[in-house]
Image (cartoon, helix red, strand yellow):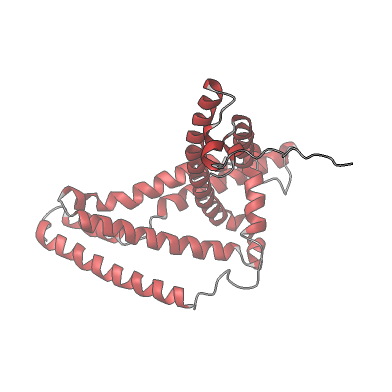
Length: 271
């Protein structure tokens, strides 16, 4: 905000090109390399200790939230679903899905993507076009991230929609929060597994888990960085209009540098 050149059109376009190259060029290999070096550097233990105070407090909050939501769902079943109803069995399965983290569909998609990558890799080896270390030419990671987020959102909201239909909006929101907490815990544990030194020995068997973590983390980074670019684009648009209407007078610099412009004082040279 305090840098007037941050809203310059030429610098904004250069940053946008770098952003596109970082996330989308060469199968997102630049992002994968950055993520491995900064987040998944192999260590002996977990990235964070699971027995610290934060974990205990999080486990307590999660247990209380889980028990309260279970009671709400049982109460909902006793009011709206009778034991003799044909929807009783469906609601029982939906109740189990409402208390589970939304990872089943995304995991199945990552498993299919890893199988497709293995088939393409085997085909490339037969034709002499593939190599053992080439893993960036498989399923497009940005597309996989989009599909994973859509499946996780659908899996999180679908079992709880009946609550929203019946007017139990607070229970519906509580269920979404619980699913988000469970999903964050599962993603943290999966990322911690990728952080271990023995994970590289799994080879292709660990590829679905790797794709699952990569897709979710890439989606998070894309959303956050795109939000920053969208907010920055408003300032770029206003600054471009300012330069087009009045190029010799910049409103941004006037708001930042409120003092009068400094000028070199004339000094008399005494001989």
